[in-house]
Length: 252
Ligand code: ADP
Ligand code: MG
Image (cartoon, rainbow, N blue to C red; front, side, top):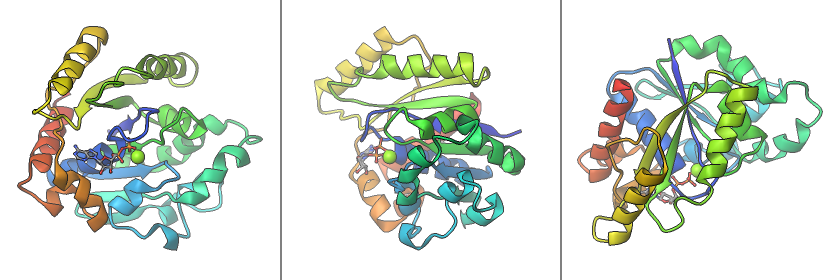
């Protein structure tokens, strides 16, 4: 059976894409069959895995509009054990184009249903919004993994996100669970990072991953080389921490 994890937080720049790419890549490195789904029009997961976004004819947009088959859209084994359902800016129009489509919250689920058993883990990288695209991710997923950036405004918007998850659970996907939160961009030199971790722990009664992702220059560089961190710099702190996160995800 596959486990489908949506990486979501409506705040931008908190480490969703970095987590989706590198968690997926570290699961794949451990021999798991993994599909990464990019459902963000920015297509950062797509380019971060070395795919030229502008060249794509079959993307998640074409899939959701019924213009391409899923087999045409998925780029199989772009790295060992790691496949990708890509996105690019075409997806930006989907919000409006889907307005009149029936059951538009379930489009992704409908297509993923057919192929999900070919993968052990499916990791969905969400856009920074609670839009129809994120809703499609949340109806497809079993769990939601929330990256929280260790900065002053970390808690802002978290209540809204958890309300949305609960709403989806009650109306659209009764199986949806909060996978947990993972702290990202932790800076051991500042008190602020530590304060944020303690504040969130105090306020949020949910699973919190023991692994904390540090701020690591190599993690920031890897996407411009089109490589996940475990391949770009296998011995970096970033690679080490995402491997530990993958272990925790496997153990859950
Ligand atoms: P989101 O998908 O939530 O918008 P990203 O994963 O794209 O966030 O991260 C935002 C920026 O921060 C990117 O430039 C990314 O490379 C960088 N970044 C993310 N996590 C780290 C980290 N742990 N250390 C250093 N830079 C990071
Ligand atoms: Mg992103």
